[in-house]
Length: 173
Image 1 (tube, rainbow, N blue to C red):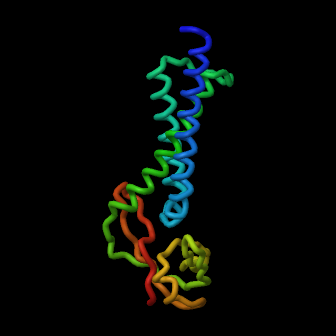
Image 2: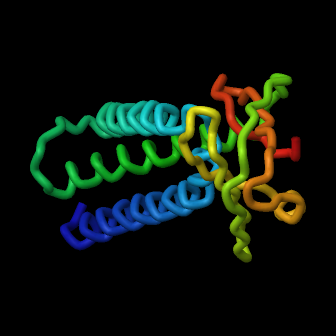
Image 3: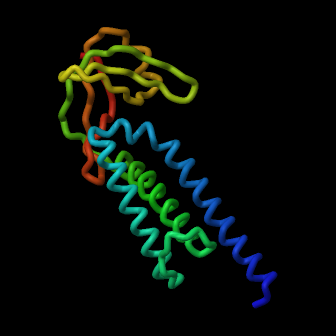
């Protein structure tokens, strides 16, 4: 293979990996508020992120026979980019699957609505939990108009497909 075609192939692989990284970053930007709606969202994100990073790292290493190093040459750079891409993909897709294929638990948490914020993309409600902690959740726009500050409410809890509970909705008490 000539030097020119090797450089073109390197550029195309780098471009594909960069495009995949940007795409998974956009997926995570969309799924971020829904990860916040999970009761153990931080734990879920860390677990999914590192599982994806390890899977991407090992998968790329085994597929292309690369010995990992901490240098930033072209082979190692692609290895780390593949690991980061898989990490973001696992977290975003995992969040989507968890909330899409969920089942009701019949469990609710009594809270007090602190504030309701509407934007053109999403509506958020900030609630005071029974332990005194304030948390913010994404809600649908139709529900937003029914809440006022200092009003009692109930968080409806659903169990996701991956076993992580999340706030499926909020209703007046």
